[in-house]
Length: 488
Image (cartoon, rainbow, N blue to C red):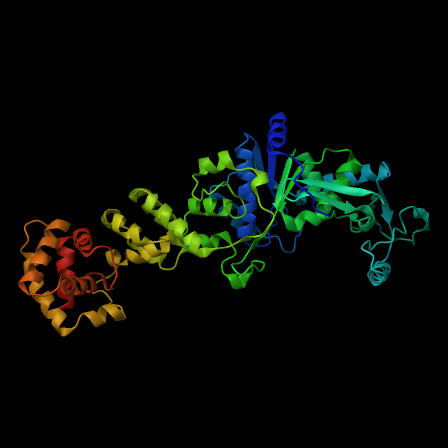
């Protein structure tokens, strides 16, 4: 049952000032860094950084079959690209299994846990019977108070929590409000499997306690785990961290985010040409509000972010909004900074290796000179690279279909005459070439577009580009005239 939010912002902030804030991001390394996981990491990072606290990173690698080094590397790489830093070294869960078993032994000694010798067939029978009777508690507690000497010879027990049978377990959640769970519906769940391996439920609690985590900020798909984990804290006499369960990200259609909605991993968004600053801003605003403000610097996000402003409804991915925001940041970047971002993204985008192989100092200078015109039209770095193609394309340029259609026999005739006018220029810059082309069009008694469009097609191989006189200036006299002569 959900009720109102448990704390006012004032009480919330006062509590934070009493102790150092410690958050954590705890991904399972079974694949890429999911976009939802990236937002969870960002929220943890913003919350801790805004309060002078720490954000820790824990790799939950207990699933040995699915956990891979490649997945771990992908997670670390994704966080680094986003600019989300963590304090200290990453902590790995699997090597801590002995510590997890140690805690279970303490719980057994205190009577907070017990050995269960139920067989797989018995457990299946219990679950089926409970479901048939409409009961949520699936385990019937048959070994809760039974003498272990009654166990079958050689049987290896699982260790279960001796959970409270009556009353309520309450989670005071900073996003979901007061969430009440009836204990009669919660099982004596397994802490340690019969093979001696700790369960996820146990490992998470022990690790969070040992790491000094004060605030658990995670997806609301973990809300059902919260009462069981609280019961472990209570059984050990440990302080329960404050919790905030954030709604998941949905697709534009309101359905749970899936492959059919497009990119799911952070690395895909990098390959699509989005800037890390854009992703930080965009992800922060997915489900978190701060008045009508949409665009935030990272410093503003750190100063403004707080948990009570996170909504309870799932946020919807909006790629049009993401494109618009990315275009804004591209235009805000300096030309040299944007060139640095292009350097970083080239290994990850289509056609990037071709450009990387050609990036001589001369081409870098040309790209930098062309950047003001290029970035006005681009919404992503991929579009920026595609728009710059005319700068580094091999001669003779391959014309696309539209450009080829513009270069008719009449248009080529105009270009033959125009080459002579351009070759005679004493000064070669945007102003000088514009004056020459306009004068040529007037002399030929034709519209400027009838000259400029074939000129653009011949120089860039396409029908869209930055302003054509900027193109002439950036390419320079020798390259521009050579490309025109290639077409004639």
